Length: 469
Image (cartoon, rainbow, N blue to C red; front, top):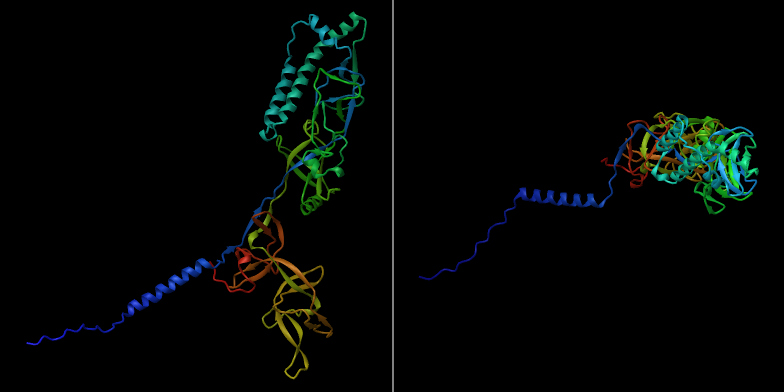
């Protein structure tokens, strides 16, 4: 029996429609995902009412009427007036021991046992409490101010108890070994100098606020009791007027707003004390803008300080709160008010523009336009370049006078996306920081609460259609 030849059976091609559809969908999804990660996303932001607190903490330099008093003779100085308190004219402020024998002579005398009175203890306690409440670790140098203040207080209290003994010593020796020095006029006593005593508000610069005087680092020279001073050296100073001021750096626009108010409430961070200061705006020689805040009280409280940190207590700006990333600038053509025809077929504004017919003759056409802003001072409308071009000729609707489009100006605004495309809206910024801006609400060509805007203005183009995310 002959063997037959075996051939492989070829199956017919059976297409599964379900697999085809699945493959198409799979490819589509893969392509869409790839495109999604390779293209930028337009994110929307809902406009809401809000407020933004201004950065109102400043470091300023303190100005007073200060008179430096110089030693009339060489010797060891011992103070009797309390630093930071008022002395009357001819009150004893200090004595000078010219021979250097005073301390030795007093030590050899039987001074008896001295103790602090209740009033003196209260004085120490008050100084300690004031220091604790005003201490800030960021300004550790104030510890040294307090050290010298406390030292002078101790010496003054001790010296007051010695006055009678000194008088007895002079009588016993028959020679005046000390000189008494009295206040030349009424004022507040301070036992330190820094070279800023004659500084005027109009002479303040950023270098001074940074602690530099004539290109040298700021130095506060404290004068300790029982120290040796030469004739002609500064021995103390008097502040002769209760009126004083602080000069702070400030933004020119913000400063102008505060000057219109006349007065501003100030909080001193040293002790949280609050007071009203009269405002004066300064444009100084270094090109910066400063604000002088003048006060008529509490000068004694801040007598030890040349620099103070203050907070201006002003109302927060309230309006529509938007992110700074949504703000953009755009250029527009300026059209005089008389060349805009109010109202149109759809209730909008129009212009009468020159055009050419097919046979080349000159004619005119009424074109409806979108107005982006109206400047009430210059009486000009802002129109987009998509509506008019440089060189277009517009007709006055009544007199047929012509106007050639040419002038441009810039507006600040955001892209509104309520209609599904990037629609520029002009904004008026009341205040802004690094992240957010507060804009004026309910303007004719601006934003309204609950509008949707583009979060990142750089991610879109004018009139771009938007798939909202």
